[in-house]
Structure formats: C-alpha cells, structure tokens
Amino acid sequence: VGAVSIIAWFGTFPGYGCTVVFIEEMGRVKIQLVGFFMMSFFMFIIGVKYDYLKHDNKNLFALLYGLTVFFANFGPNSTTFVLPAELFPT
Image 1: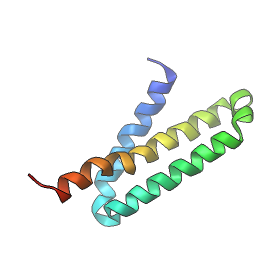
Image 2 (image 1 turned 90 degrees about the vertical axis):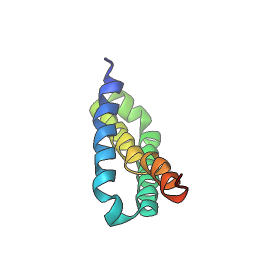
Image 3 (image 1 turned 30 degrees about the vertical axis):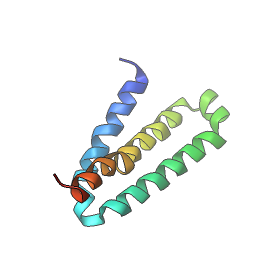
Image 4 (image 1 turned 120 degrees about the horizontal axis):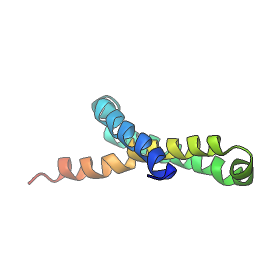
C-alpha cells in the first residue's frame, strides 16, 4: 500500500464521518461551501509553496494533502450523493 493511499484513507473516512455528524446541524449547502473553500485554501498553499514542500518539508505536504482529502469528503463528495437522494426521492 502506497503512502498516498494511506493518507487518502485517513482523510476519506473521517471526512464522511464528520459529514454524518454535522449534516443536520450545519446544513448541506454550508457543508459543501466549507468543503470547497477549505480544499481551495489548502491547494493554494500547496501550489504556492510547492518547491519548499517538495524538497524541505514532505510531512507538511502530506498533512496539507490529507486535509484536502478530508475536506473533499466533508463537503462536495458527500453532499453530491445526499442532495439528489433527498431532492428526487423514488
């Protein structure tokens, strides 16, 4: 198992879990907006500081990538499946 798979695994399941816990409290659209914003924020940091992260601080890069995966799942990935099921029931 590669390092990227491990980082993704530790970001995916907690992200889904947080969505389950907070979806009624925060609301679907707010969770989606928070997820998109935080993903953009972490990817911006990775993009701006890529050379530094690549050569000098690989652990910080892994953390930022893991947080991006977390907010991908605590946000647009989860709500993409929840919203249509609620809006268009069978």
